[in-house]
Image 1 (tube, rainbow, N blue to C red):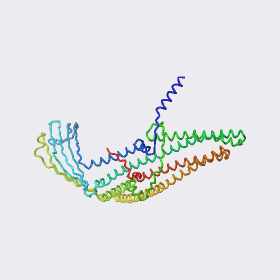
Image 2: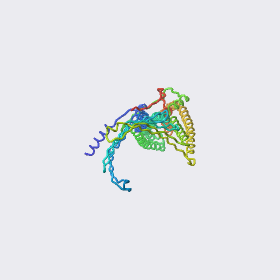
Image 3: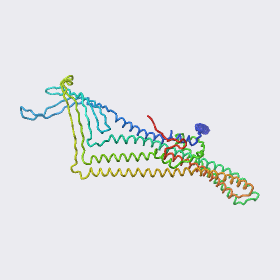
Image 4: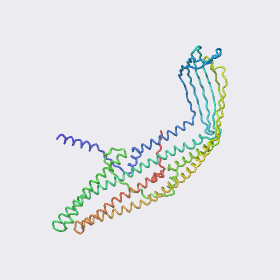
Length: 486
């Protein structure tokens, strides 16, 4: 008895804890794009790209760096030459060293070089037969380094990095629209499953009623035993159909609720949408929106730009490489800290580094030829991507425009099938139709109901697929953006 009471209380609590939610298609899409795990994943991917772009933007500004060796202590044996005895000996050497320096750099995008400046202070203390202390200072040093063959990676970065961010923004919108399209599919999958369950319930109730009528008619020998057995079989099959329909509906409902970030036991009531008025999409307009918004175009452009960058670098480096590093500054060494900043001496440095391959067996030349071939590959791939994307857009537009007429046709077919079933049912009750005629009419009616929902499903899937390809909202006549700001 106690177990029964506990189970009853648990059932009551569970039932009260279940929520009932009314969902239309717009709300389903909003929930999917706001709360689903897929949408959150896409937001995180975009944030990663955004942070990379901000990191690149930061590199364009002056960089200030502190480099320091706070403490370095060494005790070791070192070899020394004693001139008065003309021998080499090992002596123990102890040393304490500390240094710190501040360096500032600024990239020059126009030339691809870098200006730098620094200041440094070092302290050295040696221990031995004679203890010595020295301070080394570089109050200021400024310099410039540059690739003399004028391959400019900063120029290419200025072209490619904004393209990467724009691509990430479009990919975020594209992926969110993919989530919307998936949500639409799950919405109508549940709609079909719910309607199948309702039809199974109606069919079972109808079978009960018809079987009861048939039993009375059989008693008065109005119908044969075989026909009564067929109706009894239909009733049994209807119970099985209803059980399977409930299982399919529960699965579809939980898949939708989990996808939307709800509790999986949430009860959902769907509001089936109609078509979008008389919306007609122009193919040329849709293709233009795709060219402006589809991330595949930006991805191809980025790949082509990176291939051209690599080809330019390989072309510059295939014969030789040459770099310049020059600086001028002041320095001094003294036993006392204050003296280290007096009577400063000039410090000059200029370095030109030249690398010429004397024999590399065609390594650099072949690398340049490969890079140049990669440019051709990237350019052809860019054209191929544009061709395939535009073809898919055109086909989707054509499908969407035709789907509206299909929805209207399926609605008319449902009306006809309902009337036919009602008339056949009345004829069966009056004894003017047999079980086969009634079963056939009911089958046509059920098929028409499913076709009506399926036609709406295909219509809305085509619409959201078109939105994803073009990233354009044809209801509000505005581009689709899901850009995040930090």
